[in-house]
Image (cartoon, rainbow, N blue to C red; front, side, top):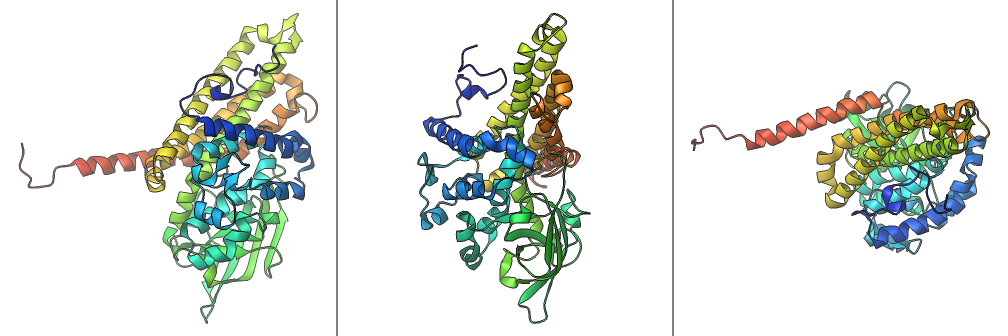
Length: 443
């Protein structure tokens, strides 16, 4: 096999030498620069760090110094803010004003090239999902107070929505934020669970209940965490994503200045929902790369592993299993590229309406396909795929990551239902708009 020939299913078609209508010269230049940086600073060490369940602190600093946390933000990038902070390009490959969602997709794909979700999540989750609400909805004083340190990676933030008794059911959040009598502070009480990056974060973009029950009672606050009276945090041991910093946060009479309110009080649910679309699409992109790593590892293994006097790839049942998983994978990959293309052509408000439901579906489908590809890999590796060390370790670890793809960002069953409900809603809205007003004369 030629040294530059990719293992089947290991790369998206545009990186396997096939033509694509999506990727311009700017995207290919960025892919090469991004690949080199991420390989040197993350990919080649990712397995060791996942085994240790910890990414060394200097890695975050290295990414921040190179402005390589910024690509995790939704496209287009916040050009005015970045130029104000002296950031004009990323790795000298792309000017910030030229950045689009394909640059974002390439970045997310490269971060996942190790096949492990934990190491990259430990670096980018806070920037990707904790900063955007401040950028989109925060007033000028809030942005001035927090964005310089957050965008440059001098301080860390997390997104804190999920609670012990409220996951996908966001409207049921119980953490409260009551105003003090002098009106100068919110006093926050409650708990947040499964918060990625929380253990290292100076702040959280946190969903809190500022008034009555239901979605209209929710607001978003920037809540200080590290070294803050009333805040206690501890790591949570989870089955996969071991190095991502999954955290349990308890809040006991935590005083937060009212100036830390993001946007308007009572608008938290709407802000959270718009934030979810970026989260779900980037999860789908990263998960699709994980599926590639799993299936390609299995493909390479069965090409050399012998049983019953011949290599496993010569067994029709093995080829059938690879074909079934590969067809699902390549279909998902093409769908994701179509999504990303649409994101480059629609405004944020248009994308939220037109793609919100389908983004949920794409994220759910990505988890289903990762499950298929990871299970295929484990079975083809056999005993090696059930072993936490050795040549099947990557398959075993990716399979452990599968629930981390199917649950966070909205659990699979909730998202499947949400997708169809959103499609019905959009269809009914359009058909109603086409109805002839009552009393209008017939043709």
